[in-house]
Image 1 (spheres, rainbow, N blue to C red):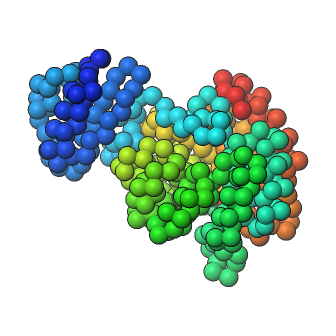
Image 2: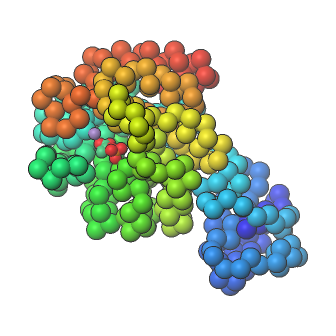
Image 3: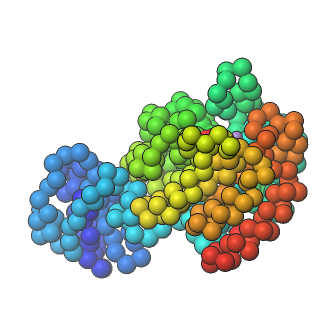
Length: 337
Ligand code: PEP
Ligand code: MN
């Protein structure tokens, strides 16, 4: 249920509504918009009667969100969520590119790629320290050493950093080293991890499960949002289909669907979405044209020797060219890059 406050409702009136929400066994979430403030009552209790609130001072009206996801829904918040980070705004007018190697392999590798990316206009560096690999016998990531490298490179270059966190118990540690916590496709429904990421208060990049529906993705976002952590970034990264020509089937229609259903920023990962570096530039352009707020792209200084996902990684020179090509596409849809 959402309680829409009158224009000019006082902080005391908003607080009184929040208290009432709480006293009825619901969790209050207050969103102060440019024009209106709303108080959402979230919980699985029986709906309170609307006049419990409608009779309170400062209340304009009461409505209900019919979708199973509430805080993630556009009905809860009509305006786009914009997340300021390191001089850019995720979900704003600019298309934000997060790029870097699949895995952190060494300080030299990260520094080399980070400098090239920064030069190309990237604000956020990616790199996995803990890798969720299909086989236990393949490279599992540098772990803590990888986090330290990310923190050093962040310090030296001024780039913000995103890395994957695989378990709830890792969240407090990883959160100390990076700017954005990534939850990978295999963990989209790891509910303890979602709770922990929500509690951390850090921005979270939530990747769509490879066998998950759009609604399930939004329900997972809801877990994080329910901790009053509203800085959630959704990411389409390809889903399993019968098609084998690509590693996954990049569901670009998820972009406008998510933008319709939710106020959260939507990114696209064409690297995992296709599995082949040659397909990354065309699908990046298509993603921007479809309205994506950002791209997550794997870039490696020497893809043939990459410890993971070399086949889908762009060399820095190709990435730089892609960035300039993307500027034209972004401009055509009224965005910058
Ligand atoms: C990654 O970004 O390196 C990764 C493992 O992605 P996904 O969870 O989408 O497979
Ligand atoms: Mn990867």
